Image 1 (spheres, helix red, strand yellow):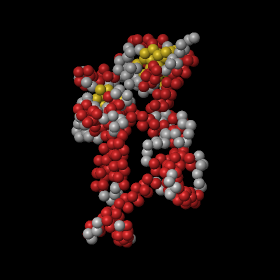
Image 2: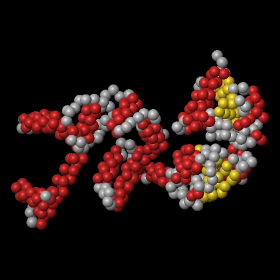
Image 3: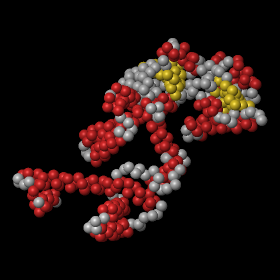
Image 4: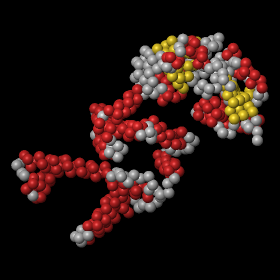
Amino acid sequence: MTTARVVIVGLGPAGDDFVTEHTLSEIARVPRRYLRTDRHPSARLVPDATTFDDVYEAADTFADVYSEITDRLVAAAQQHGEVLYAVPGSPLVLERTVRALRADPRIECVIHPAMSFLDIVWARLGVDPVEAGVTLVDGHEFATAAAGLPGPLLVAHTHANWVLSDIKLAVEGATGDEPVIILQRLGSPDECITHTTWAELDRTVQADHLTSIYVPNLGSPVAAESVRFHQLARTLREECPWDQEQTHRSLVKYLIEETYEVVDALQALDPEDAATDDALVEELGDLLYQIEFHATIAEQEGRFTMADVVRGVHDKLVRRHPHVFGDVVAADSDTVLTNWDAIKRAEKGRTSVFDGIPTSQPALGYAYAVQRKAAKVGFDWPDVDGALPKIAEEAAEIREVAHGGDPERVHDELGDLLFAVVNVARHLGVEPESALRQATLKFRRRFEQVEHLARDRGIDLHSAGLVVLDGLWDEVKATEA
């Protein structure tokens, strides 16, 4: 069986002088030739070549570009046995298509070394990248690839001013006066090296496909706060005796507590008072630390890291929003939720509508979620008029068993009554947990006013009796009304 082979060569960083004799001999040897792009000074050295510039123009994302080029080259190699693929610079430096081809089991990849644009960059900057500790970053991944790095950075694939803008915006803590060197068309007759500042990064030159930038030092690393926060969690875990003792299980109560405190802060938000944001910022931070704490424990155990957590939820949200990141049409939120549930079922391999409902949540929320899932497949009253009579029915059954001396039946029937109340709440569009919490807060507020009245009048609550307390209660209600 003949092996499908893709021979990959690099055209160097600029003009003909940087193309090796070996590359030229391979171009001459292989008659079926392909160019990633003809927008390169040495592209003319590959005669009768098919270019993939049309893919760049038609595709929606760069991931689509790389996938399409890979598939076309594989198909061509399978048809002709061997094809040549020429890329700018070196095939081994920031070439996504080459990475994809190397990983493709359908073909054999033969890669020939070539001079990279990096060699001219170091010469022009007068920098030894090893001694200086320079990190090479793809401009399209700057916000994540450069996270925590203050520099020096060499950023490639900065082919347009919008890429430069995205890079600039990724560093919130930059002062703006950090020096930046913009390198364009190195090694060509119109080579240009421009010294500017971070603030002027996207306003100094017109970027093109032969543009890169060198950042000697950033005033604040990319995602500096997130990195600093992670380092704090790690330090506490290593040096604080209490933190060292904690496990995933021991932290559960704190996770629940912090979650409720976030809910309290959300309910206390006042759109007219920006100061109420302070409590929410604080409580969200406390909740975030719980997540970071769990991730740090797992990191120490060699199981997963915070990066795995963030990557996982990012990829899941992309998958579950095909109307945003794919070609699915969703004109309203109902369609979005229907698609979400279908994708979730397929991902999890679920067989029951109740699979995935967390059983450890508060009982009212659990009942609400179970009812809502059953309703989605049609097992539901058409409206609240069907659900309301069940409350009276269950209340009557409570009366029957209340004095019967069977605590298990009382427990069972009371549960049925609460379940019926939750069903009515659902049909009315009321979240039962919130409604009960609000009613409890109202009761507490009123009773605290009863306590206040009793103190003012010298009444002992513990011996006053129901008639007296009920009278005070009615006074408080009348005052509120």
